Image (cartoon, rainbow, N blue to C red; front, top):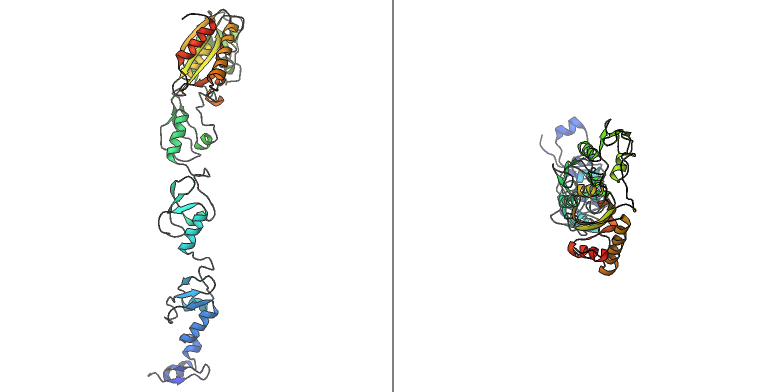
Amino acid sequence: MAPWKSQCLKCMKIVSPSYNKVKLRGHQCGYCAGTLVDPKDAVELMKISGFKPQVSYPGSNSPWESRCIKCKKVTSPTYSNVKKGIGCKFCSKRAVDSVDVIAAMTRRGFTTLEPYPGATKAWLVRCNKCQREFKTVYHSSKTRSGCGFCANVMVDENDIMERLKELNLKPLEKYQSAKTPWKCRCLVCNHIVFPTWNRIKQGRGHCAYCAQRRVDIPSALKFMKALGLKPLVDFPGSNKPWACKCLVCGLTVSPRWSGLQRGQGGCSNCADWGLNYGRPGYIYLITHEKLNAHKIGIANSYKSKKYDNRMYQHEKQGWVLYKKLEFKTVQEAADIERDVLTWLRLKVGLPAFLLPKQMPRGGHTETVNASEIDLPIIWAKVVELSRVEK
């Protein structure tokens, strides 16, 4: 049972087997069997495998600090793994050096704000372009270069709230995702709408009721009654004929809701709709506090109408009437309107202020920035041009 110092006649190395082991197993030197490793052989194998050991041989299964001859990085493979053919973890992309990771993030436009936590863990960084701070993982950054905010893949809550404020929408629930309908209240018409952030980013997030993509049935019925019409069937849609009874003459007519909203349609027997330049009319000046805009316009004056259709449309969108001036014909009002707009554009130097999408019913070309000129100044010009004293 005692170790017996001997020389292996195969590998010529000195070993100490016991007689019993040799008797039971036959000749099998520990070096030849792989159970013993000569440090010199281990160092030679490491060099052949591309490693330069930095410390003495620690054992076959212990980490052995070595430098990769190819990438010059220090790593700690085990002798047994190297013997199996497993090479440098950095060269084989099984691991990444923190210095290389930080350099790669810098190339992608990020400044790292904390030590590298690992390829799959959240890492706090700052985008050098938009200066936003957020957490990303190096694993996903390898496949998607660039900032998610700059690419419109991610969104900042402050940006969302600012955009909703511009659209006159108030959120009634917490934001979930870009594709999830978001319950909001329109601050203009007070309706509940459900835009998505994707639609808002595409410029289509305006209130569906204000943009006339949807119709509030109670308001529509009230409007029809004001026009002297009584619907005989349920609302069919904006562009379909709507069978109604005229409360003035009793005839059945079929106007379209879209036409009524533009001042067209009604009872063909007794209604006097549309802008008729030969009939009486007026010039008006209105203002909108939230849009920060003033607008000048013209409309017909109909004694037979109980409801001023044009002014109703503006008031429904949040406009407030400042003053209006009656004329014998709309043509006279149109001439004054033209002269006032020429004065505003050429002499005062104020361009059209609002965009078409901000006035879906039309009239954006007749607007000015309310911060640049006061209502009394505009109206004084109207009076001057019309030669009518206040």
